[in-house]
Amino acid sequence: MSLAPTLLAAQSQTPDSRGFVVSVGDAVPDFTLTDLDGNDYSRESLMGTPYVLQFTASWCSVCRAEMPHLESEVWQAYKDREGGFVLLGVDYDEPQTQVRAFAEQMRVTYPMCPDDAGAVFHSMAAKKSGVTRNVVVDRQGNIAMLTRLFDEAEFQTMVELLNELTSEP
Image (tube, rainbow, N blue to C red; front, side, top):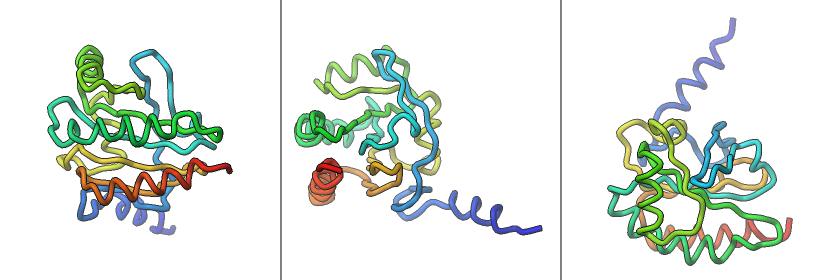
């Protein structure tokens, strides 16, 4: 009996220095999210489309600082690309009414999805790690970039990568 699969599973759950339990190049873990308008998203349904999972929460000041930039420099810039693009706000463990009020207050038009009990968050980041992070996924469903907090230089690198990922396939 081989221990390799068990060992690999254990290694994949060891967080890196920024709290991620996934790495660039990994297949994004399976997930299912429903936005505030009732639209469903999953790893499978988004296959072939580049996308960003933006982990956020209404109580997070760094998230609030980043969201206007995500709206203008990412969502508005790439949402109508011919090859497709999706930005999902994944709200950490808050009720739908609170997520809706948060989205309205922040004036974001990208889809916001409640993440009950942080299930999607914890498939990608360790428990008790900070919520402000983005997971950029390429057309093949692989993680292309991971961001943590709102660092302007890292954010601009993400924007440049998204320009590449959303260019004609």
